Image (cartoon, rainbow, N blue to C red; front, side, top):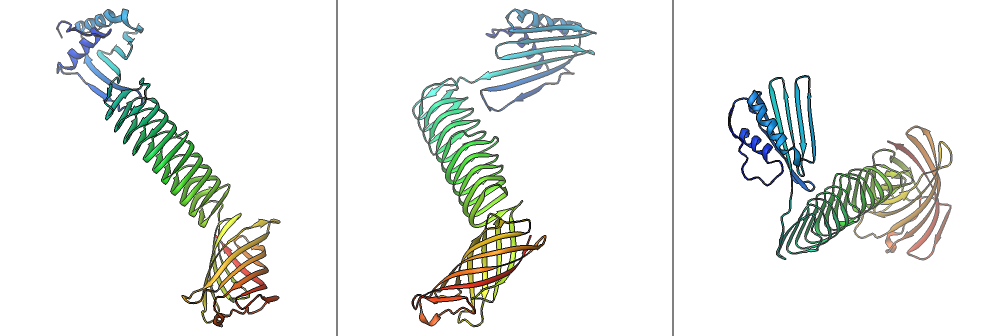
Length: 424
């Protein structure tokens, strides 16, 4: 291979090496394998890597080694080694590295260049600045190619690395860590939040979060140490804090509280409070048949955790005008021994009727005994208040210990209840 060095008018310290690489990159000679890798902007740099493989020849070796040595004085770091017939040269410059390896009649040259973006555009409508820009960005579209500190206020705010400060806009995005506030309609942080997201949709991704999300939909891929407050709250990892919303979902453990209409968690160290709380590991689920002073036939579904579970109940009494009733309540299992539990429950029942507004509110103190691993019996006294808005629907208990009529609409009843439960 022949040819003179096409040095040209390079302004970089590595001008001779670069000229040789460009010459052979574009030569189209056989035995040349060019691999180029361009990485997307994740932090501050773009990296472009060119790999060239050439069949070794004395003149070719001489040209490359001479190009390396001509630039060696301007290199920040230079390594040259020759051992066992192998030649290795590595030079580091301010924003690039070059290596030359000759072994087994094959030459490998690798050029790796990092380009730091220093684009600057500040028009108060569209602002695009580098990561060393230290002034607030106020405009319709604000973009920092790198990190930014301070303020971004606009319709769309984007930081391609870390952000420290406050983003106010319709869409706020941080491609790495966010330390501060994101307030807008859609707020997104790819890595870690250490602060607050306030908006309609809040999301963060690939690192544990130390902060809070307040919005309609809040989503975190990893753990959160803080609070999620919204209509729908989702966390892929663990929650150390609280989720408060209509639907709360956690893929890991909740060490704190879930307060919502529907709660779901893989496991819970705290207490979920809601209409329906589902805990996959260590939760409490049971189907129960029982009788009470009002309805001889009751079927209940209980779900939650032993500390606090939800009761959904259906009842039947053929003596009543409205034979069916539905109820809802809360209960708790307090261990007294390995097989005996104190089992307080509160509930409210109402007949299935458009006209009958009778309501039976009860407090029951059961003792629950585990007769088999998934089978329990329970019994205990009940205290009930009955309100009926119509005299024609007078509710008389089937049996009672005390029945005190306060007036024609209200009565207090002391009774007794018993149940058989199957847990799963």
